Image (cartoon, rainbow, N blue to C red):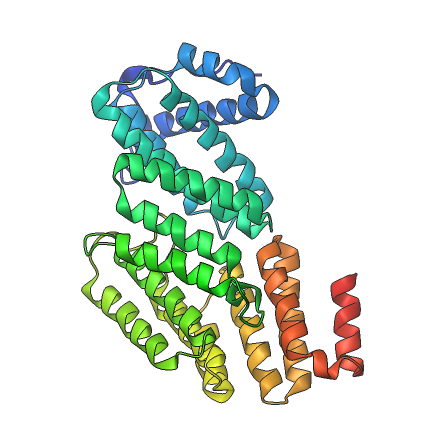
Length: 360
């Protein structure tokens, strides 16, 4: 194994993607080597990680900035890298940050490193949700909220609550509303209270869109449409980050996807299918998670319009994407729609063939 790099050499690394000088590229590669070594140490011998970090790392402003940069780099990979692979990378990165937080730190850096840790724990929670481990997801997201509260980072704290709501939401599994719905709404309402106008517009939009879904599922269509309008207003104002803390936020397609699902949950399947089809046309093939969700919701709409063959075809396409990409959360949603919307046709050949494919 190569000797681990001492960090930071020659004044640190360049977190600025715009720095394309040879020196900047070399420093970036060295930092990636450093993180790879930390990941291997965390996976193979986690008890030695703290001592290894103390021997390699001097915590200063450059290090904190670079750790933040790497968290955003990992976030940008969420729809490109298999979730099982991303889980390992994010988990090792989070372990290293937590070890650094456990040691002595200059007072002026602790708060910023806490914020980086909160952001990374949020990402770890999201990835755990993608692979279907809701228990791990809630643990990671609860940690993210605690770190964000200590860092007084209301935006990251709010995002942790939104993603915790996803782990208890029947809407996210394509199921009929259940006793947990009030629980999911509670997390989202707390997130709404935390999200100030200065937080990223994508975050405020995301909170409003999720609230719209939950209210539509609860039968409150008027409130759901108010939240859709709030989401549009948040993006129009456009304060803060243009993305969701490093995750791409394609407004043009994503808002239509949520709006279509709200129409479906509110009982207007015909309107839902039209909106969802438009959203699908605007969603690239590389946006695997979003495409799988759109196809699943379109299948539910087609089933409610009694177009069984198209519903089965759409669910089959969604399953192929989810299976190929390792998206267990999308598989759960597909299974939910299958049982919620296609059970009445369980004896039909098309549904039996779909069930065989899913079971296989």
